[in-house]
Length: 202
Image (cartoon, rainbow, N blue to C red):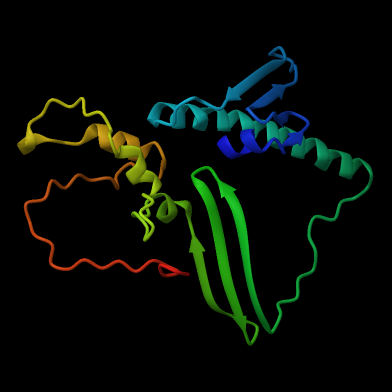
C-alpha cells in the first residue's frame, strides 16, 4: 500500500493512488450503497499501521478484481474469447519474473538448458524482510522495527516471552505466526560468519 500510494501510478477504475493515499471506490450493488474508502500513508510505521494497511489491502484487491472483471467482460462482448497463447519452451534461456505480493516483492529466477529446467529459485519476501544488518550497517526491516521497541511485558527474564517484539515482527509477515521465537541466550558464539550477496564493494 505504501509504494502504491506514494508512486501515484495506479488509476484503474475502482482504485486510484493519489501520491499520498489510495482511494477505493465500490459501486452501488443490489444490497449496498456506493462506498469510498481511503487509506492514507501513516505518520509512523509500526505494527498497528502495518496491520491496518493489510486490512485496506483486501479492499484494494477487491477493487482491482472488479476492474479486471469489467475488462474481461468487455473483451468477451467484443468476441475476444482466447485466454492463452501457445508456448514453445526454448532450448536455452534465462528468465526472471517479479510480483508485488502482500508481504513484499516475490521474484522467480529460472535457467533452461536442453529444453529442461536446470535451475530454479523463488525469492519470497520473507528473507528480504528478515535479512540481517548488511555490510554498510543498514539493518533489515525486522531489526529496524524492533530497535527501541517499548517493552510492555512485565515478566522477568526467567519467564520473558517477548510478545511485544514478536508482535512487531509478525506484523510484517502473516506467514510467520509460529516462526518467531525469543532466545535470551546464555550460550557463547562459536563462529560468526557474514557474507553479503554482492560483497562490500559489489
